Amino acid sequence: MANPHSLQALSWRRLYLSRAKLKASGRTSALLAGFAMQVAMVELQIENEKHMDDPAYEKLVVCFTVCSVLLVLVHLFALLISVCILPNIEAVSNVHNINAVNESPHDSLHNYIEMAWACSTILGIVLFIVEIMFLCWVKLYDHRTSAWIATAMCIPALLLLCLFAIRFYVILMQHKFHRSSRGLEELENMATKLNGDNQLNIQTV
Image (cartoon, one colour):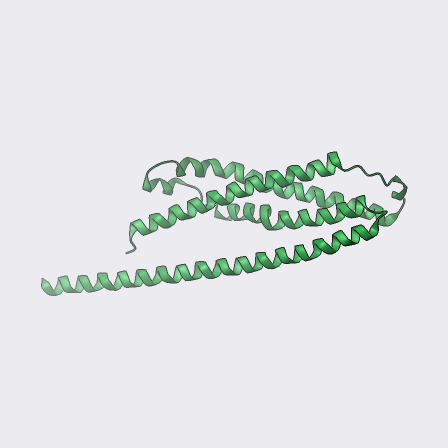
């Protein structure tokens, strides 16, 4: 049988990790969603009215609009999950009782927490970089050299972000696998020790 203190420690670790993810997702989503709204609705002033009859420019404006809306919706979705789940986890984490972790919903809502984390970081930041590219083209349509330079700078950053996300996920999975392997070995050693003790007690009797 596994050590109950080790299981409780693992549960508390998952709770604190879930709380940290929700806090980071909430802060990041609120910041980027607010910035995107300010840029799209307040700061952006389309001055190239003479290009509105240009089909290519009109497509750029449509793409920028769609990207901005998706960016805001994705971050608002992550923010909603954080706001709904985080108070329940915070309430448990502030209780100084080792058994209080069993009352936290972080395990049953694990998929939603990971979804908020992914929307706020990977998907949200990718959309943010894409929005910057469209913004440069919309604002610098008359200065296409500058727009191309901005695009050439954003595309490598986007690729590096994707490579980092994949590498980070692989390392994280390897770390979890090694931790699980060590946990299984500890359980096997404990089971072997318990079986040995039981056999010794039977022989003694």
